Length: 305
Image 1: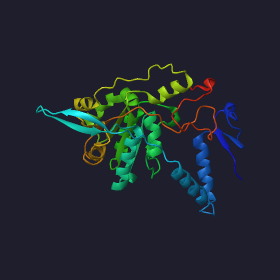
Image 2: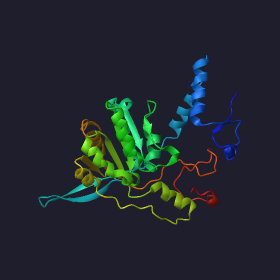
Image 3: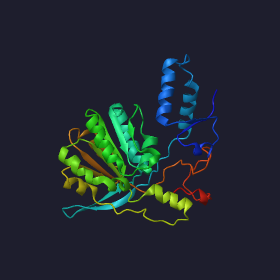
Image 4: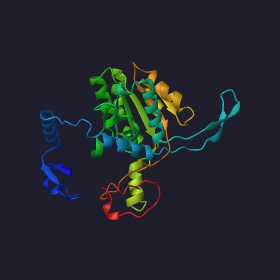
């Protein structure tokens, strides 16, 4: 038998969005513990029962890869300290591109199994979930849909203290990081060897996108004036790196991941504003996803709070 099982502590949520085949009135923890106990007591005989489903999932992923925005190279004039100038070519970066580069380097080095990632809330959180190759249970520490901005730094510190042999990386956005960066004092004083990746687009991009879609472009509190995070890190005695272009990203990312095993390091990545797609509007079914960043009609009454 198949169908939809809705587990919820609140009776009032039953069939509010989708009518389930089974409604279970309990907590998610108790339900999953009961399911695990039942599976252990009577293990399924067909160990390959999900083989077709997994192959279909992999086929869909190959046909519909996560899109990474690539910007055309631009020419800049660089003024050197000795008074000379030179022409350089640089390409801007996006959230997805930076996370994809980090994931690739960890995969190639064979260290992905040893990594634990934490996130704040926003575009960086969604892109991390989409683009990091997850190989171990409990590898992503995030508040999920609870939307607790600012938690990534604390999560990463705790993960490192509990797992000193692991590579603990905080993947954070400037909006979330700005809420709790005073914890850099603790990291600097205690020399907690965490890796802090700050994806800085000087905006609350996810909120901005909602306001564009559901609030008739009435923007409020979505643009940040970010500090110089490298200077901030230095003030607390923490090493730092900075990158704002794809040409220098591979080497800067290599340094970030490999050169600071025994001390904390902060990587300030200056990125462009891009939405995280696909997404599903409130109250809409999963087969009605927003796939392209373009204007279209939406149900204003479904605006998220």
